[in-house]
Image (cartoon, rainbow, N blue to C red; front, side):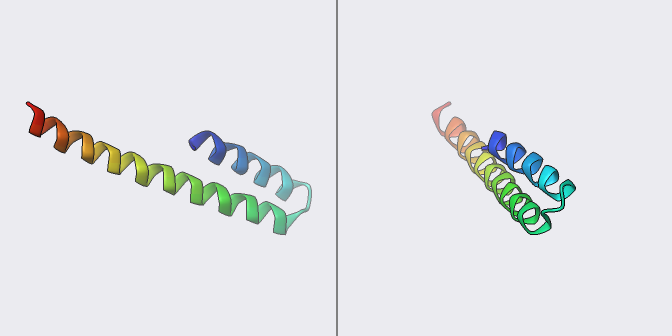
Length: 57
């Protein structure tokens, strides 16, 4: 998911540099959403891993 966030961020920067402001902003918005979604999933999985590890050992 982070890979897609980076791809959309690069596309947004390229579109913004070429003058497509609306399209560039949309790509950056998608990239921001994907980054924070991946971050939230990573935190949830980390917390689940820590709690399950405590219960097993």
